[in-house]
Image (cartoon, rainbow, N blue to C red; front, side, top):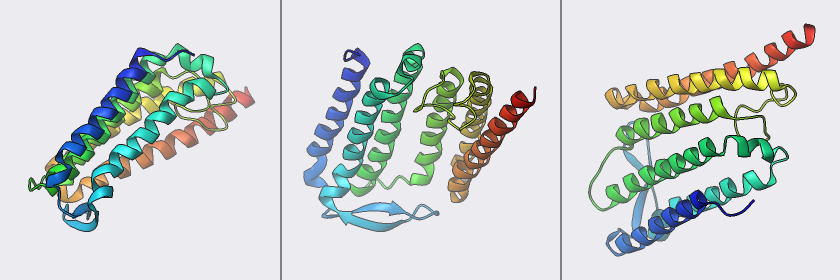
Length: 214
């Protein structure tokens, strides 16, 4: 597979994040807030270098993985069939990490925006587009709701991923309640998606058994 335009754009965006971080680096404190408790209060600090560049480094690593996956997946020809949705999700993921990174930088230069007001928006955005990706994903080993039963049956794959896609979109909507009830934001983010993914996992097993019986 040749290098695609979307991949070049993503690499340039990540490079821009590194450069913009380097630009504000001189005004960052020597010890940066890097962790916040459930109430949104800073309770963990790391050195300036890691505080500034940890997120961009993590993002660069994950982007490299996103670029490699369509080239090494055993069912990579199926990924090509929904590559536009895959590319869309990669862009959304970069925006998500950028949002988290901006919150950290802004907090540490004096604009104390609570992560509890940022995370619900970020995760709602991420879950919604992950739902779209699942709904359109063809069977593969890297993307979508992958269980032993979805990977064993095209029919079970399609039914399970359609369901998982809808549930992820519902999770996205529930996340937004975290903006209103910020003290409980983490619960609105984590509980629905965990419950829905467990349900999707069990659903794939039951659908496979039903298919096996028929």
